[in-house]
Each structure stands twice: as structure tokens, then as C-alpha cells.
Length: 391
Image (cartoon, rainbow, N blue to C red; front, side):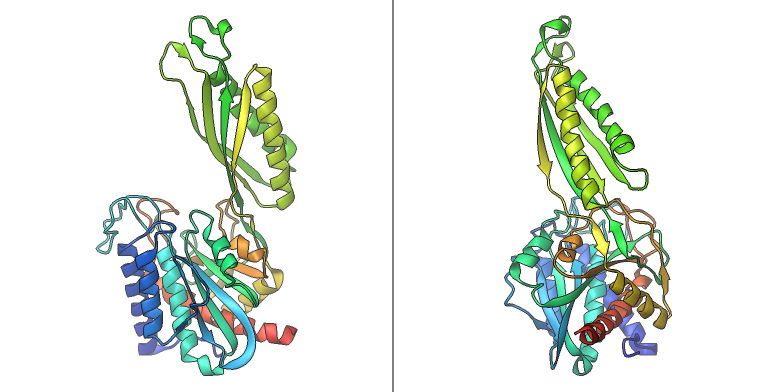
């Protein structure tokens, strides 16, 4: 297969190049919609390799580039996310973040370096590509808004299939989690304001206690999962903040709480949100209080295309890589926005990391970069062939 990774000295050179790129990105993390230096670095690396930047797609941050197009054929896309998190790094690595309070604690530096590696491999075979591979280096995944900006720019127009990856610390290097159907959850947020009536704490009957009402609402919300969601499906409601009051002897006039809902199915997502509103408002009313719900719309669930999943399994086998059935994650990913437009496949790449995502000591095993680059380069080539045969 033409997508095989280079061997010997060439393979070692690529591996070291990708490690250097990843470490450069890791030292200079930037938050969502602020990835200006990251964008410049990516553009520079791609231009140095002779890879053309598709400047017709207007993005404030992020890069769209292309390999191929010299021979007529379909378009497929590879996507990596580029933003970092507001976390103070505690790894002690020699290439640790140089920006206080900023860190690539979710491995987007790994994703970017891997897809740059795929681009370099595809560039070496550009004359043989029958079609175009569009490279999407997407901003603001952590804010769940970058993918919509990419779609609005037109960068997904004409694309027949889109592929993305996320590192997976609990999978070994060389293993790829490939699965059709649901892989990651829809991730919605909520903030609820409960309005009561203030009173002295010694005279509770003169007021309406929003703290007590909030406590009962939080407890009642858990019954949605156990009684309104089928035991054959799954969902999560987590209240992560609860605030109210300013003094120990005053019943406040309002309290508020925040949290998240995670679902893997569109109908379950709709049902849980409907029941959430009924439970919140009904319970508040039972205590004489009023509740206002503010929704934070997150990405839909990541649901992988069955045909593309089989394609990826075949590619992994031909490259001597290990394809495993992953455990779905209740984390959210705005790659799902692309899957609403075109068939897509999101893959977990094993990185054998010491900590889970968003931990201040998060790291990846950099030996996973070269296999990931080879896998996605070969997958793009196979997807081009598959799209041609399906035409």
C-alpha cells in the first residue's frame, strides 16, 4: 500500500521532526480564538514543506491547507485542533509551557503535529494522489465554537469524508480506537437562577428559601437519568457549582447552580433537556420559588460513519497497527459539527499517558506521533480511492 510509513533513517527523521514540532507548540500554548502565534507556526511549517495554504477560507485563527489536486478526483479532509487550556502546567518537562496559566493539557499539540506529519507524507506522494486532501487546523475546540467557524468559512464544501483524532492516554502507543456509531457525547451546559425572598435566618417562614429549593432541585435532577432515560442508553447530569447567600444568619433572595448534561443520542438529548426544565421549574414552584434556566449549547454527539470505520480498520491492519474497540467517552468534541455536514470518522490514538485530559500533569508518549501520521496519511489516500469508487 502506498500509504506505508517511511522506513529506516527517513522514518527516524520524520519522528524527530514531529517531536520537535509538538514540543514547540507545547512551549507556546494559546487559548481558544487567541491562537495567532500557533497559526503562524503551522503556516510556516507547511509552507516550508511546499504545502499550499488555502487562503480563500477566511479564518481569524487556524489554517486550511491542501495537498494534491494535481490529478482530478474527490476531496477528503483531515482535521486537528490547535487551542490550549487555562491550566498551570505541573509536568516539569524541559519543554513545559512558557506561558503562565496556559497549557496544552488536552494534547492538541499532539494532534496538530500528527496531522502535519500526515501532510508531509502525503506531500511526498502528491503526484500520485487522485484528488485533494484538505488539512483543517481548527481553532477553539475547547470553546466548542471553532468547527462552526470552519464550516461557515466554506472549508467543508465539496468534502466527501472528514477524519479527526484525539489522543487517548489509556490506550498503548500504536493502538487506534475505531468504532462506528456513538464515540463522544453531546456536551451541554446550564446555569439555573432560583429566586426566593430574603429573610432573617431565625424567621424562615417570612421568606422563601432559594437555597433549600436549589438543594431539592439538584437532588431531583438525578431522577431524570434513572427514570426518564432507558437503561439501554446513557446520559449524565452533573451539577458542579452551587452558590447562594452572603452571611450565616440571612436567608438570601436568590441562589444559582451550574453544571453539564452529556448524552450520546439526539433523542435522549432532547428528552433530558425537556425533563430538566420540568423538574427545575416544578420543584422550584413547590417551594414557592421561581427558576430561570440558561442553556449553554454544546456540540452534538460524535457519531462515526460505519463505512469509514471499516475503511480505517483495514488501513490499520495493512500498516501493522492495532485497531481496538474503544470505550466511548462522555467528553464533548465539536468534530461532531463536521459530521452533521459530511460523513466523518473520529479516532482515538493511543498515547499511553500518565494522566487523563485536562490534568496539570498531562503528557503523551511522543513515540505515538509517527504511527498517527502514517495512519492518517494512508487513511486519506484510501478514502480518496473509496470516494472515487462510490461515484
